[in-house]
Amino acid sequence: MTSLIASRPGTAPNIVADTDDNLAVALTNVSVYYTTPVERVPTLKEHILRRIIGHRTQYREHWALRNVSLRVNRGEAIGIIGNNGAGKSTLLKVVARIITPRTGRVQVRGSMLPLLQLGAGFNNELTGRENIFLYGSILGESRAAMRARMKSIIDFSELGEYIDSPLRTYSSGMRIRLGFAIASSLEPDILLVDEVLAVGDMAFQQKCRVRINEFRQSGCTILFVSHAMATIREICTTGAWIDRGELRLHGPVDEVIQAYEQQQR
Amino acid sequence: MNYDSQQEGPPFVAEIRELGQSYQLLANLVWYNIAARYRRTWVGIFWVMLYPLLMTAVLAVVFSGQYNPQVEHYIVYLLAGLIVWTVFSEASASSLYALSANANILNSIHVPPSIFVLSTVLSSLIVHSFEILPLLLIAAMDGIPVQLGWLLLPVPLILTAIFSFGIGLMLASFVIYFTDIVNIYQVVLRIGFFATPIFYNVATNDGRLGFILRLNPVTYYLESFRYVVYHGQLRLLHDLLPAILFAVLSVALGWLIFTRVKRDFAYRI
Image (tube, rainbow over all chains, first blue to last red; front, side, top):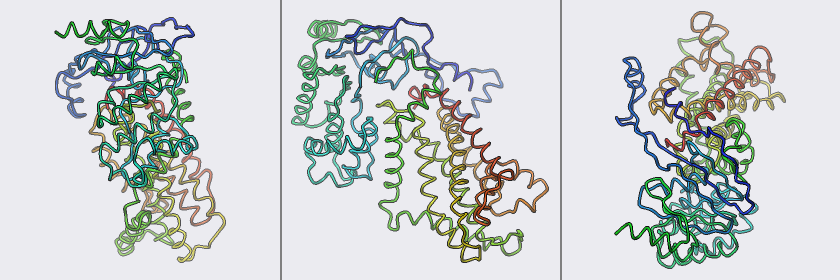
């Protein structure tokens, strides 16, 4: 037990805070690694037996992010690109405070809306309307605030009278539409988007892109993870290329995409 | 709104602060959890009242024959004990799944993870509070005087929930590392059922059993709850004080363990 807790993530060395007023998100020397057992995960009995005979389970460290430093200014829309498993999603999770990095410092200024998984926390037995309140409160919004937005959410989701049917009767497309309609009714300072637009039909994807562009025009900072380079070019002004956990390049979006695509060939 | 990973402070303080800020989410989780659970059933929340009544009937048939517990109003005694035991066992056992059942939330939005343990425990407390109604009805029919002191009944029940919350926090922390805890805890609860004075009388058991019963924290919640049903009063030294002490101890320890390992949850669930 103690050996497992000893590998607890933390923030040991003191890193000077970024105090620039223009700052939205700053990562300083951020590292995240997962320890995965080389052998099969032991049960409690095996763990105790191994302790007694002095055999320690071997762990392999998988570095999802290694010493990443990245500054995102207020109002910047940054596209994060890279191969599968490069650490793009982990980067967003660190910013979203879902993962506490093992080392380094994370600073976030302003309210944040993470769109990592649409409709996380939806309850199948509840109606669409009830799920608006539930999901809204998961995103940190009060009942009153959700009630005020109810009509525009239902309109955006195009669910019509189905809004009072239980969620288990919804198709997956309807669930995603509702999830995006609820989340995008918020007015965050910082928006994190992870591939959520890859789902849904063409018309809905188009609608989502329009909504995200509206966010950008209203001065929202956007961190956008995607494999769709066209979408990234459309939405983002800058790009960051993550390669095997390391930040390879950060600059104007066209330069970063070009460098990434060249390396792919 | 601003976040700085180096100015978080100690996790056991930060978690209290965040939990306090998330009361609206807590209320929604509890309310919708209860609503979703009973919406599709035919008699809804009445299932909750039916279960202890049936269980009481079975125990009454089994134990009123050859085994003489020397207890007045034995049916009331059984039902009162079962209600407290059910709150404790259900609240603590379902805490084992509190984090894994909400893994998709924990993996996509930052929320204080203890909120899922707390909402689980509060759901159990609220649902089983409905059982007080049939209990008091039976008590009155069995000749226990209807009294104003019955208004004190929530006190021992809430203390039971606080104690269960502490145990639930510990279980939710351990199960992240060892899934076996689920099976082990099932056995512990089975044994606990017999090591708690649900159908025995503590006062008439002095030997080894009496010793175990007095060592078991859950005993004090049962005793306290029953005394209110029977006499409409709380006894400070006999059971209320130990009940409060065990509740505070369990939450303090549970909170320390939970907040110490909580950063690991994201890496493990």
